[in-house]
Amino acid sequence: MLQLRDIKKNFGAVEVLRGVSFDLGAGECVAVVGDNGAGKSTLMKIITGVYAASDGEVVLDGQTINGTPPGDIRRLGVEMIYQNLELASQQDVTANIFLGREPTRKVLGFETGIIDFKTARDQAEEMIRQLGARLPSVDIQVGNLSGGQQQSVAIARALTFSPKVVIMDEPTAALAVREIEHVLQLIKELKARGIAVILISHRLTDVFEVADRIVALRQGVVIADERRDETTMQDVVAHIVGAH
Amino acid sequence: MSATKSIAPGRPRAPAKIRRSSVRIESLIVLAVLIAVMSFGSPYFFTTANLFNIVLATSTIGILALGATFVIGSAGIDLSVGSILAFAGVVGAIFGSELGLPWWFAIPACLLAGAFAGWINGLVITFGRVPAFVVTLGMMGVARGVALLMTNGQAVYGLPQPLLWLGQGRVAGIPVPAIVFVLTAIVLHLLLSMTRFGRHTLVIGDNERGARAMGVPVRGLRIRIYMLSGLMAGLAGLLTMSRVNAGDPTAGMNFELAAITAAIIGGTNLFGGRATVFGTVIGALIMGVLQNGLNLLAIPSFWQQISIGIVLVVAVWLDQLAKGERE
Ligand SMILES: Nc1ncnc2c1ncn2[C@@H]1O[C@H](COP(=O)(O)OP(=O)(O)O)[C@@H](O)[C@H]1O
Ligand SMILES: [Mg+2]
Image (cartoon, rainbow over all chains, first blue to last red; front, side, top):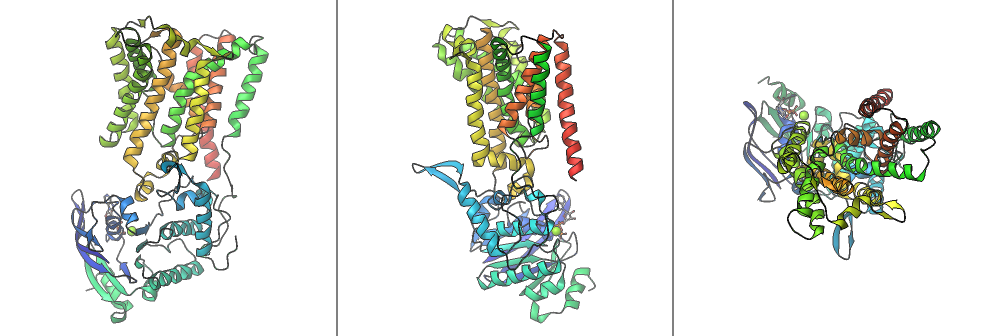
């Protein structure tokens, strides 16, 4: 479904990614692990179009998508929950969930650019309800929410438009244990619905619970790409820290 | 909301504000106090003639401040509006009086001249990656300079009669510029609060990178925001030109200061992400009353610049204090 082919990225003289390739199938969860600075977030931002790759190809359903703007890549069904969430803190929950994709009202069949507030609000409420997230209201400013609540807004935003691929960059970093369980449950549900997931996490117990494959990045190269049931936590740790 | 399971329990950090008020209540209080003080200070304050003076003074600054609301809401700044006002007025006056064209050509000429200058601002900011502060400071010099160059430094007089109505006419006793200001404010209020354009304007002021990641076309949007600001300067130029019956290359000097101040005291977040048109209208009224009051009290006009400058800094300072308390 999604293929990365020899992705390279340099920021000025610094080579952050030095030829990364791996595949992702429908309903599959691939965990990307690696030390801080290994290039995990950079790689994901190349998939979503936020960064342009210096070289290589991102292929979605047989179609090369790199060079496509982030909005179009979302429309093709690739969503990402960013490490820093990328929410607009002075906007309410509904506005954030529909950011970039606000439903609009048509007048005499013409696109007006006028936001359909009611539709947006109803759908946002429905989404939050489905996720079981505890929010006082979808009308609340996101900046007034706790870290965990903000995380669920970012998750709701990624799931509202029936994605094919969901990328989660350390989605549990701000969460308490019980909330983490819920995210892991969510990943399993996504997989069951045929949605592919890329999970970036430092918590190897989580990774081993939900991932089908584990890709270890070190200094911008894939050091290991293994099926979960063919590796062990010790091996993965060794890949991350570079013990062999 | 019924929630059986939860991925995000916990209380919000700050007391939950369900809907932030559309305008800072402080600015309404300031306006009320200012009006009270002025009406005690001068018996002329509450005369009809004087109230019309206030609306007239408010409408020029107010129209510029409406543009500033969008620009500052997007975390930008436009220092060139005063100069663009003069440039547009000069272009309009030349079209209206010197080229032998139908009189109404002056109207699109003013508006297009303003929007064009704003478009240049937007292009250089987005594609040249030069900070807005620098680009619009440069445009402040360029637009003024071009206006002086086109006219040899002399005002262009002798506008066709129908144009003067725009600056001097009345409808049901209300000065036409005030009507234009109110209508423009209504349109821009709808634009800011109801449309994707308005929403995205505030979002790029709030989190530009996030907006881009979510597919907001940030560059095109930013260019349109500066064009809007230029268009407002063109409109203010049109009204000024019609009022004084001349395209004056020295018009609108320092108006950017008052316009930015009006937007800020109206509750626009200087760092972007929050802005309302209604707040800006109140802010512009405060500027208008202040200016008018100082005139009535026979305080030398130099003090107006001083007081506006102080109001701007104090408004931002108070906002920062409030923010410090919240964090
Ligand atoms: N925009 C950028 N400009 C320059 N260097 C960057 C930029 N983004 C990331 N880097 C560098 O790229 C490397 C990889 O970063 P990142 O992809 O965030 O790593 P990870 O997510 O694996 O911790 C780091 O050394 C980081 O400093
Ligand atoms: Mg990272």
